[in-house]
Amino acid sequence: MAGEHDFAKQIITDGIQTAAANDAMDEGAFTRALMFQLLEHNRQTRSDDDVISELEHYIRDIEDGDSTVVSRGC
Image (cartoon, rainbow, N blue to C red):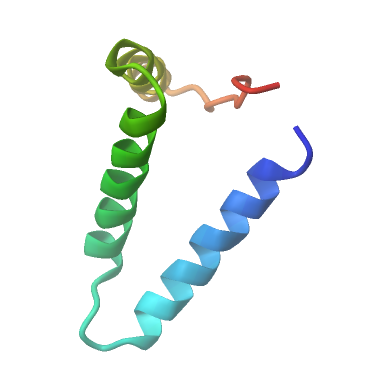
């Protein structure tokens, strides 16, 4: 990867800071909305089975207490 992970992390950090500065916004609601928008985008560019497979991988990592390793797109 050519810095996509760091770039995405910075965008999320910036978004959370912007949301926190807006009294009408809730950080939890913002992060859920962001996840929803990312899923919708992925569903437009990838198959549902591919998106579901990736989400299942993240869920298994969470259940196992493991750290998620970004390996797709490398």
